[in-house]
Image 1 (tube, helix red, strand yellow):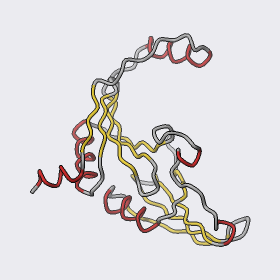
Image 2 (cartoon, helix red, strand yellow):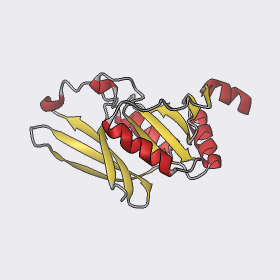
Image 3 (cartoon, one colour):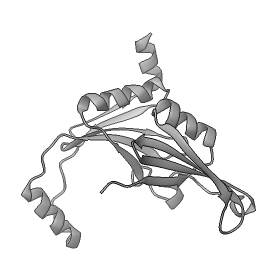
Length: 179
């Protein structure tokens, strides 16, 4: 079952809008504006990822939110940025390359990783959250499933293979090459 929307907070709605609407190409469909339960008020913006599937951002206002902390999903919890991240579906490797180039053209550095069973590209949004596009390139086996089930209750499982490759792409290098 797919989810309807994922909602996170932003401190920089203009930057968030530029990233998700102009760079990512998502369509801003709706904003809800109103009071919040503990005082203050909020704007809740909904960007359509695909038909009837959204990512949403809270812009919080008022004294109740005067000391709004870190907005990056991982940094807010004191974790490394790679832990909590947002991953979008990429149907093909060609689509993944298009998304990598889209981010680079938009001025965002990109990390590309071949995880052996999937391939991913990563960048950061204006909130400091790691954003990913990922395509599955492997086939899951019954052995994969058995190992995953064992790992739920045991730490006595073998480590996964390291990534086949990691590449860093700098937006400024991409722009120079495109000229």
